[in-house]
Image (cartoon, rainbow, N blue to C red; front, side):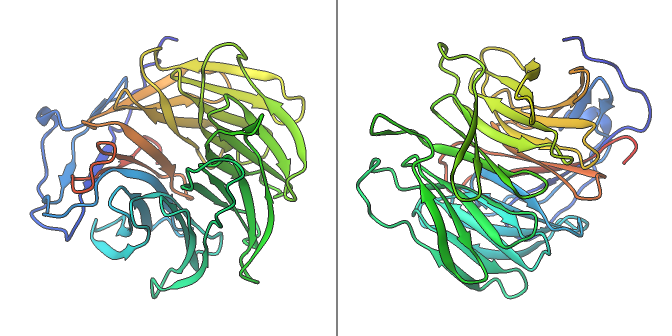
Length: 361
């Protein structure tokens, strides 16, 4: 699709690197450190120094409800909290041996959930950074041997936490009780497991969407009862790397291994839009703007794409990341968009986390 040129205020970009803030320097528009194709080049790029023992790739990002703190899940197994205004590292949590894959703030901002390669889902106190609950994955041997916990998502009321696993199962936890609520083989077919890579709740908390490498988006009740299967192509290999409900609950977006972004009507299950960043790059990061007008996506082409969620027009491409862009997250106030990148499975590299201030933000 043709990219629509947008005039107006040029975006500001902030780059965060693991470790303490140091040596901030403003870079000029000509530096080429980052920019928006179709809007303009970044004019204010700030970058903290790279420190030894960095966090590796930023696989997942989540904003605190007050839009002032950003959390990241990193390849070195840490969960980190960043001050989005000063770009300082606030807290570093040794969360998951082997790697942390997902992070999510609770709706009230009091707790932070994470999932990682040790198969555990943990809930942290956002002030003390101490573990409040831990939900280990029991050895079942039923659906495979990959026990990673890939993704977590809070229900809108903050009472339930959903998680997806590498053995194809889904689980919901009662966080207040600290107990498992339901578990079911969500993406398991014929006894073979397929990883559950992404989960997200509808805005009213009644439906859970999950995406996996069985090429499908699946809809469930909170108790794990199947409601629908959304699949764009039953023949082509198109893993679902990300799912996201629109803020009003009316649409479901999915990020595909084929570089696509597809949007379905949440009621009729009709496909509304099929967007593409190109056949040679996968898509993983996915985030709706709080007003539901824009959709951000990211992936293997090392860029962030902004789409008009109604027409499917690509509004802008945000460039500057040098590695895969695994995650995007919109601040709750709608003013900022964060994107996280890094080399896959490299534990000590510099995580490139950028915060974009968009025109009108």
